[in-house]
Image (cartoon, rainbow, N blue to C red; front, side, top):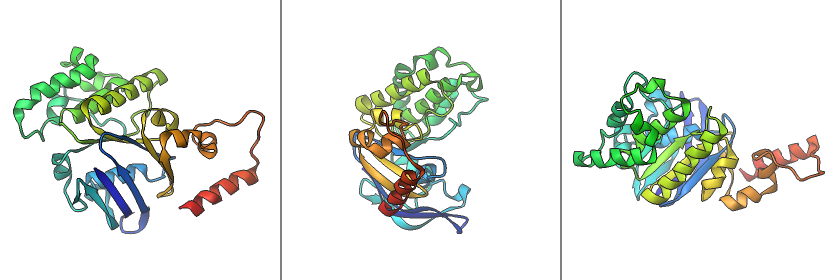
Amino acid sequence: MLKITNLETTYNDIILALKGISLEVLPLRIVAVLGANGAGKTTTINTISGIRKTLNLTIEDGTIEFEGQIINDKEPYEIVSIGILQVPEGRRIFAELTVEENIIIGSYSLINRGMFSKKKELVFTYFPILKARRSQLAGYLSGGEQQMLAMARALVADPKVVMMDEPSLGLAPLTVKEIFQIIARINSQEQVSILLVEQNANVALSIAHYGYVMENGRVVMEGKSETLRENKDIREFYLGLTEVGTKKSFRDVKHYRRRKRWLS
Protein backbone atom coordinates (compact mmCIF):
# COMPACT_ATOMS: atom_id res chain seq x y z
CA MET A 1 0.00 0.00 0.00
CA LEU A 2 2.67 2.51 1.07
CA LYS A 3 6.25 1.91 -0.07
CA ILE A 4 9.35 4.02 0.53
CA THR A 5 12.45 3.17 -1.48
CA ASN A 6 15.98 4.54 -0.87
CA LEU A 7 14.62 7.84 0.45
CA GLU A 8 17.12 10.63 1.10
CA THR A 9 16.09 14.03 2.45
CA THR A 10 17.89 17.18 3.56
CA TYR A 11 17.00 20.16 5.74
CA ASN A 12 17.92 23.57 4.28
CA ASP A 13 19.79 21.73 1.47
CA ILE A 14 22.59 21.04 3.96
CA ILE A 15 21.67 18.59 6.73
CA LEU A 16 21.19 15.03 5.50
CA ALA A 17 18.27 13.74 7.58
CA LEU A 18 17.26 10.47 5.91
CA LYS A 19 20.05 8.42 4.40
CA GLY A 20 18.47 6.03 1.95
CA ILE A 21 15.72 4.44 4.03
CA SER A 22 13.32 1.83 2.67
CA LEU A 23 10.15 0.59 4.36
CA GLU A 24 6.69 -0.72 3.53
CA VAL A 25 3.22 -0.54 5.04
CA LEU A 26 1.15 -3.46 3.80
CA PRO A 27 -2.67 -3.33 3.70
CA LEU A 28 -4.43 -3.87 7.04
CA ARG A 29 -1.16 -3.88 8.98
CA ILE A 30 0.32 -1.87 11.84
CA VAL A 31 3.96 -1.00 11.16
CA ALA A 32 6.06 0.46 13.96
CA VAL A 33 9.05 2.76 13.38
CA LEU A 34 11.20 2.81 16.50
CA GLY A 35 14.18 4.85 17.56
CA ALA A 36 15.48 7.54 19.86
CA ASN A 37 15.16 11.31 19.42
CA GLY A 38 16.90 12.43 16.25
CA ALA A 39 16.71 9.04 14.56
CA GLY A 40 14.63 10.41 11.66
CA LYS A 41 11.23 8.97 12.57
CA THR A 42 9.25 12.22 12.45
CA THR A 43 11.15 13.36 9.36
CA THR A 44 10.00 10.18 7.65
CA ILE A 45 6.29 10.82 8.16
CA ASN A 46 6.62 14.56 7.53
CA THR A 47 8.20 13.69 4.19
CA ILE A 48 5.38 11.30 3.34
CA SER A 49 2.66 13.79 4.32
CA GLY A 50 4.06 16.47 2.01
CA ILE A 51 4.56 19.25 4.58
CA ARG A 52 8.14 19.73 3.43
CA LYS A 53 7.97 23.36 2.29
CA THR A 54 7.21 24.69 5.76
CA LEU A 55 10.15 22.70 7.16
CA ASN A 56 12.70 23.45 4.39
CA LEU A 57 12.80 19.69 3.88
CA THR A 58 13.76 18.43 0.41
CA ILE A 59 13.67 14.97 -1.17
CA GLU A 60 17.07 14.42 -2.78
CA ASP A 61 16.61 10.85 -3.93
CA GLY A 62 14.29 7.88 -3.70
CA THR A 63 10.55 7.43 -4.05
CA ILE A 64 7.36 7.42 -1.99
CA GLU A 65 4.74 5.20 -3.59
CA PHE A 66 1.11 4.82 -2.58
CA GLU A 67 -1.12 2.23 -4.25
CA GLY A 68 1.23 2.13 -7.23
CA GLN A 69 1.46 5.93 -7.67
CA ILE A 70 4.59 8.00 -7.01
CA ILE A 71 3.60 10.83 -4.65
CA ASN A 72 6.94 12.60 -4.11
CA ASP A 73 5.73 15.93 -5.49
CA LYS A 74 2.17 15.99 -4.20
CA GLU A 75 0.95 18.80 -1.94
CA PRO A 76 -0.28 18.04 1.60
CA TYR A 77 -3.96 18.44 0.68
CA GLU A 78 -3.45 15.99 -2.20
CA ILE A 79 -1.84 13.48 0.16
CA VAL A 80 -4.86 13.76 2.46
CA SER A 81 -7.29 13.41 -0.44
CA ILE A 82 -5.82 10.05 -1.51
CA GLY A 83 -6.24 8.68 2.01
CA ILE A 84 -3.02 9.32 3.99
CA LEU A 85 -3.64 11.15 7.29
CA GLN A 86 -1.15 12.24 9.93
CA VAL A 87 -1.73 12.48 13.69
CA PRO A 88 1.12 14.82 14.64
CA GLU A 89 3.36 14.70 17.67
CA GLY A 90 1.93 16.74 20.53
CA ARG A 91 -1.66 16.34 19.26
CA ARG A 92 -1.89 19.83 17.61
CA ILE A 93 -5.62 20.12 18.19
CA PHE A 94 -7.36 23.52 17.83
CA ALA A 95 -7.52 24.49 21.50
CA GLU A 96 -9.84 27.47 21.01
CA LEU A 97 -12.48 25.38 19.17
CA THR A 98 -14.86 22.83 20.62
CA VAL A 99 -14.37 19.09 20.35
CA GLU A 100 -17.07 18.84 17.69
CA GLU A 101 -15.61 21.75 15.68
CA ASN A 102 -12.24 19.98 15.66
CA ILE A 103 -13.90 16.88 14.29
CA ILE A 104 -15.72 18.91 11.64
CA ILE A 105 -12.39 20.38 10.48
CA GLY A 106 -11.01 16.86 10.13
CA SER A 107 -13.80 15.98 7.69
CA TYR A 108 -13.02 18.70 5.13
CA SER A 109 -11.56 16.19 2.64
CA LEU A 110 -14.69 14.02 2.54
CA ILE A 111 -16.02 14.17 -1.01
CA ASN A 112 -19.37 12.72 0.02
CA ARG A 113 -20.53 15.11 2.76
CA GLY A 114 -23.39 12.76 3.50
CA MET A 115 -20.83 10.46 5.14
CA PHE A 116 -19.94 12.97 7.82
CA SER A 117 -22.71 12.12 10.29
CA LYS A 118 -21.88 8.42 9.98
CA LYS A 119 -18.17 9.04 10.47
CA LYS A 120 -18.79 11.34 13.43
CA GLU A 121 -20.86 8.70 15.19
CA LEU A 122 -18.15 6.16 14.40
CA VAL A 123 -15.45 8.18 16.16
CA PHE A 124 -17.78 8.78 19.10
CA THR A 125 -18.14 4.98 19.34
CA TYR A 126 -14.38 4.64 19.73
CA PHE A 127 -14.06 7.72 21.93
CA PRO A 128 -17.26 8.06 24.01
CA ILE A 129 -15.62 10.67 26.26
CA LEU A 130 -15.44 13.00 23.24
CA LYS A 131 -19.17 12.64 22.66
CA ALA A 132 -19.81 13.57 26.28
CA ARG A 133 -17.61 16.65 25.87
CA ARG A 134 -18.48 17.57 22.31
CA SER A 135 -19.35 21.17 23.26
CA GLN A 136 -16.29 21.70 25.47
CA LEU A 137 -13.31 23.74 24.29
CA ALA A 138 -10.61 21.30 23.20
CA GLY A 139 -7.92 23.17 25.12
CA TYR A 140 -9.53 22.13 28.40
CA LEU A 141 -9.30 18.41 27.66
CA SER A 142 -6.73 16.24 29.43
CA GLY A 143 -3.65 15.09 27.52
CA GLY A 144 -5.16 11.68 26.85
CA GLU A 145 -8.44 13.19 25.68
CA GLN A 146 -6.58 15.55 23.35
CA GLN A 147 -4.75 12.55 21.87
CA MET A 148 -8.09 10.84 21.33
CA LEU A 149 -9.39 13.98 19.63
CA ALA A 150 -6.39 14.11 17.31
CA MET A 151 -7.02 10.49 16.36
CA ALA A 152 -10.75 11.12 15.91
CA ARG A 153 -10.00 14.11 13.66
CA ALA A 154 -7.98 11.81 11.38
CA LEU A 155 -10.44 8.91 11.48
CA VAL A 156 -13.42 11.05 10.48
CA ALA A 157 -11.68 11.74 7.13
CA ASP A 158 -12.13 8.07 6.12
CA PRO A 159 -8.37 7.34 5.76
CA LYS A 160 -6.64 4.34 4.22
CA VAL A 161 -3.40 4.92 6.13
CA VAL A 162 -2.99 6.83 9.41
CA MET A 163 0.52 7.92 10.44
CA MET A 164 0.77 8.44 14.20
CA ASP A 165 3.70 10.37 15.64
CA GLU A 166 4.48 9.49 19.28
CA PRO A 167 0.88 8.92 20.49
CA SER A 168 2.20 7.89 23.92
CA LEU A 169 4.09 11.16 24.45
CA GLY A 170 3.42 12.72 27.86
CA LEU A 171 0.64 10.31 28.81
CA ALA A 172 0.19 8.18 31.92
CA PRO A 173 0.79 4.42 31.49
CA LEU A 174 -2.89 3.48 31.87
CA THR A 175 -3.88 6.10 29.27
CA VAL A 176 -1.18 4.82 26.91
CA LYS A 177 -2.55 1.30 27.26
CA GLU A 178 -6.07 2.51 26.44
CA ILE A 179 -4.89 4.56 23.44
CA PHE A 180 -2.98 1.63 21.94
CA GLN A 181 -5.89 -0.74 22.45
CA ILE A 182 -8.05 1.69 20.46
CA ILE A 183 -5.39 1.92 17.72
CA ALA A 184 -5.43 -1.88 17.41
CA ARG A 185 -9.25 -1.89 17.22
CA ILE A 186 -9.30 0.79 14.53
CA ASN A 187 -6.81 -1.22 12.49
CA SER A 188 -8.77 -4.46 12.70
CA GLN A 189 -12.34 -3.19 12.67
CA GLU A 190 -12.06 -0.28 10.22
CA GLN A 191 -9.38 -1.89 8.03
CA VAL A 192 -7.10 1.12 8.33
CA SER A 193 -3.35 0.61 7.97
CA ILE A 194 -1.23 2.29 10.64
CA LEU A 195 2.31 3.68 10.46
CA LEU A 196 3.22 4.08 14.11
CA VAL A 197 6.22 6.20 15.07
CA GLU A 198 7.20 5.57 18.69
CA GLN A 199 10.02 5.73 21.22
CA ASN A 200 8.08 3.41 23.52
CA ALA A 201 9.16 0.21 21.78
CA ASN A 202 7.45 -2.11 24.24
CA VAL A 203 3.93 -0.77 23.72
CA ALA A 204 4.43 -0.24 19.97
CA LEU A 205 5.58 -3.82 19.37
CA SER A 206 2.69 -5.13 21.48
CA ILE A 207 0.22 -4.17 18.72
CA ALA A 208 2.38 -3.89 15.57
CA HIS A 209 2.72 -6.62 12.96
CA TYR A 210 6.11 -5.46 11.73
CA GLY A 211 8.76 -3.04 12.90
CA TYR A 212 11.72 -0.96 11.76
CA VAL A 213 14.45 0.41 14.01
CA MET A 214 16.01 3.72 12.94
CA GLU A 215 19.22 5.38 14.07
CA ASN A 216 20.79 8.53 12.63
CA GLY A 217 18.58 8.59 9.56
CA ARG A 218 19.03 4.94 8.65
CA VAL A 219 17.05 1.74 9.12
CA VAL A 220 19.41 -0.48 11.11
CA MET A 221 17.07 -3.38 11.83
CA GLU A 222 13.66 -4.68 10.77
CA GLY A 223 11.47 -7.71 11.23
CA LYS A 224 8.22 -9.12 12.53
CA SER A 225 7.26 -7.70 15.91
CA GLU A 226 7.63 -11.07 17.63
CA THR A 227 11.14 -11.43 16.23
CA LEU A 228 12.16 -7.94 17.31
CA ARG A 229 10.76 -8.43 20.81
CA GLU A 230 12.89 -11.55 21.22
CA ASN A 231 16.06 -10.04 19.73
CA LYS A 232 18.68 -9.81 22.47
CA ASP A 233 19.93 -6.35 21.43
CA ILE A 234 16.43 -4.94 21.05
CA ARG A 235 15.43 -6.31 24.45
CA GLU A 236 18.37 -4.62 26.13
CA PHE A 237 18.73 -1.32 24.31
CA TYR A 238 15.09 -0.58 23.41
CA LEU A 239 12.97 -2.54 25.90
CA GLY A 240 15.29 -2.14 28.89
CA LEU A 241 15.44 -5.89 29.53
CA THR A 242 18.58 -7.85 30.35
CA GLU A 243 19.24 -11.46 31.17
CA VAL A 244 19.38 -12.17 34.92
CA GLY A 245 22.93 -12.24 36.20
CA THR A 246 24.51 -10.75 33.08
CA LYS A 247 26.34 -7.49 32.72
CA LYS A 248 27.30 -5.50 29.64
CA SER A 249 30.74 -4.00 29.48
CA PHE A 250 31.41 -0.71 27.72
CA ARG A 251 33.32 -2.72 25.12
CA ASP A 252 30.20 -4.80 24.44
CA VAL A 253 28.10 -1.66 24.03
CA LYS A 254 30.58 -0.21 21.53
CA HIS A 255 30.60 -3.49 19.63
CA TYR A 256 26.79 -3.44 19.44
CA ARG A 257 26.73 0.11 18.11
CA ARG A 258 29.49 -0.62 15.60
CA ARG A 259 27.64 -3.73 14.38
CA LYS A 260 24.48 -1.70 13.79
CA ARG A 261 26.46 0.86 11.78
CA TRP A 262 27.69 -1.99 9.61
CA LEU A 263 24.12 -3.21 9.14
CA SER A 264 23.18 0.22 7.81
